[in-house]
Length: 210
Image 1 (tube, rainbow, N blue to C red):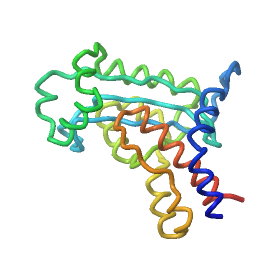
Image 2 (image 1 turned 135 degrees about the vertical axis):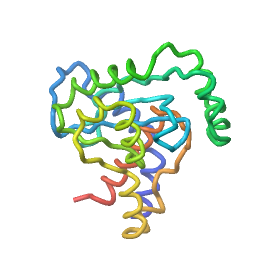
Image 3 (image 1 turned 180 degrees about the horizontal axis):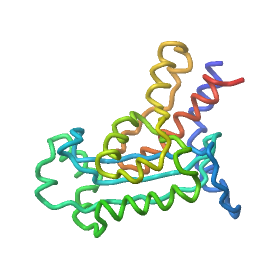
Image 4 (image 1 turned 90 degrees about the horizontal axis):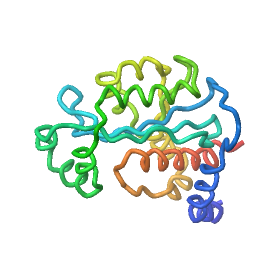
């Protein structure tokens, strides 16, 4: 079992990339309540009432975690005073990833970003049918509720939090947990989504296998 898990860890990146680039190629889009809406936000901090969204990315998968389409990956413009008010962690990490400079150069505001993502989600998901998915996704949901209410209202009220599955795996199956894909900690929205999908696929294959 452990040997099989280690083999998965070595090949998962290759197989995941192959799947994501070929999924749904050339097929007509059919909205489904079984699809999952993966969203990740990069923010100026974690205080919903004062911090702002700097980046949003969205990916749609089917129920088997196969990527149907990578959607908008948007950097949102914010004025210099917002960037200067960020805490030290955000200043350091968002500078390192290039996000701060991208925010300065962006011409897209919050409302435009929300509409772009909402239009994308509508292609694949009936209204109030598909759950939001991601890592520690409750935090992203709080920011969507505060700053992107139309998008938030379109989604199902339930969430699929990969972090919850991870915590259960740690308590219930140490062998599977010890071979969980390592975090890269890129801290860019699309990269973090793909990492979360990859992680949940691992749990699906080894913790929830039939």
